[in-house]
Length: 333
Image (cartoon, rainbow, N blue to C red; front, top):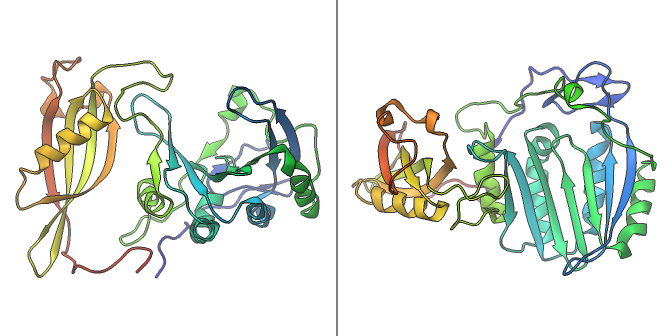
């Protein structure tokens, strides 16, 4: 059974023989420049020198090129990378990094499983890195390929690009001002149906498990996208709950609103509050984001704009459909 399906109602854009991802709606006449460029970064302090190759190719030539770049990776000690557009009120992008090393085979197995999403969906960026020697392979939201390597590997990268018919160019990608960039549209590519991964939240849950991803932020501070401290804020969470009757497991979604001065504090508040929801037990924190004050639900109209203290303001528990029998599911069966 498929874990996901790409939509078949989206027309594929092709301009000047450049095949665009399904998730991008290009503006007529705006076609990325293909080829590769290389930039040398001189290391400072604890950072070593680095060569960065920026590669832009039509989608029909991209997958084999990315797979070839994986040959640069060592067999062990890899860390996954995922970037998604954020619902958080105080930042635009959520960055997830692997907090445990994995083998190359494990990374590539999951990459191949979700590769159509990685290549087609412009709402995410994904990659992998290793330290010895330093290698980072990263596919940005526009599906430009960034290959960061230790200088000792630069000739190997050049040979790989030549092998795939990619030529060096003075400039690659778009040369556009902000007004022109706004003409390029983004659209979702996944079918939304029961039993399928239909959005980035569901994909994130799978990748967090398989690649050991954790949100790249300090859980004990509360800062905005520019690193400025913002103190206590309003938070919104969705928690997966369950109750086991012995014959079947019933699921529910708990929606939680609260105020806290950090992610860790909010997680602890949620955990303590939901322990009171017997017979329901907390299975997984599905979503936790800071919320804008104006986005609070009607029940919290009387809440002051600046929270006076940390605490949980509202909990709603909504049971889901049919119960399920324990012992099933997951990518590993």
